[in-house]
Length: 123
Image (cartoon, rainbow, N blue to C red; front, side):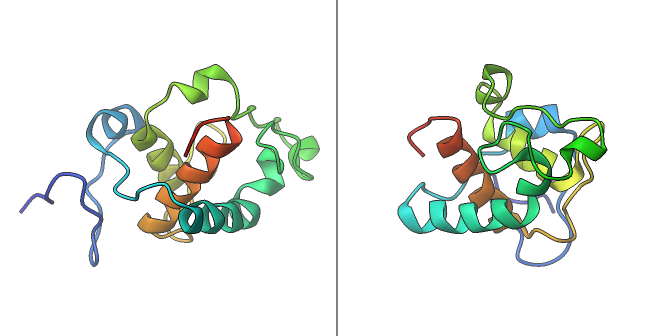
């Protein structure tokens, strides 16, 4: 059976989809609030800062050893839907490894909330 719209699975696997499809179909089920921002910040610091830097601009400590990661605060990422960012965290990007096994669905949404804060959004 398909999952209800905007749901987060408690067990089993998520439905496979590419980032563009995810951007159209998935909505962040977590309301932005101080606890979600703080949790997203902690998770971002663990999983994202090494490459994307503390400010999201791509200057993390390992960035010089690889192709530099993009600046996540640029408009091209600001306009991407939350679902696109969520799926990118899960599956990775052209050079970014996916974090599906390390970062649980709720945690991915919290990272998206924090990323929006880094981008200057209200979340």
